[in-house]
Length: 434
Image (cartoon, rainbow, N blue to C red):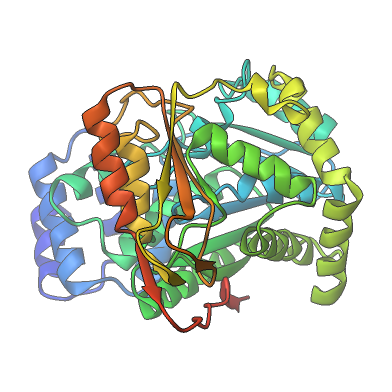
């Protein structure tokens, strides 16, 4: 067996077997297979796709390419993964809700790149919050609080780290089987009993097409179940930013407001749906009973109590829960007012994320610095009526550069589409796959 034969087989549309996939993954991780041969196979997969069986085998080989985390807590463990969007801070809400209902949520998250934010970056805007935890301390916090969140270890799924960088460099990221294996290999390696997937679709999502989002969700659920895990997927709308805040500390504040019962309706609805799915996988009752339990955990304050204990255990300043002034403050806050009247029918979601990045809220390269104070807070959203001169939103930045601010203001003014008729708003939850 050699890479030439494997590449040729896939190039001609053949189905790779377990031995061939294992040979490729092992060889690419240990360096015996060079980038140019790996790139040839990846492009053959991009053009000819993979069968469900191939995808499952590839995912499982990638999963076992590095460390496998073991969950030592006495109870059901659940994980949640989002395919990325603008203003998505649901992990900070869903994890505490699920933990307050009696399941354990050990969450490994990443940093943001481009127009989508990273959960680790958001949490590190809380003064003192530590996401670089040892495995022992991570498990201890999970046992004590029910919920802990840390950065991904470099020894977890090294095959994905190498393959993703390669795919990115040769314009082969957008392959559904390769996206599935990338996401699910990491989720399986973290060892959770149940996995809930939040697959975004729309303007601000990686999967722009609803049909493609469904295909990806179906494949990920099947791959998880083939590995013996419980799994469900929620297809959620990303035609507009999720919630009213985009940017690290701004999103943490909005998550806290949601945990206090004052959250924006769509953000609350999606968070409750995801939490209820986690409870359903754990056997806490029927879908209706799990939804009710999630609502009670949120509305009673028990969920925010879990989050407060988690933040304290991870070294964060819990004074931010009651005094948002404890967060770092932006040097400049600029109001943007509407140049016309009418109903807001659309907010250009991806462009909103890019504007937030330009203000300093995101990265354009791995390892780049971010401004935890930067971002956008909307005053109006889709379906709202706006009078000319009303405030549409506020831009936050620690940069005093007038040119950058002026450009951001001009761009932000253009993300809104207006009409004289009130629009019918898309439901935040499009579909649930179990």
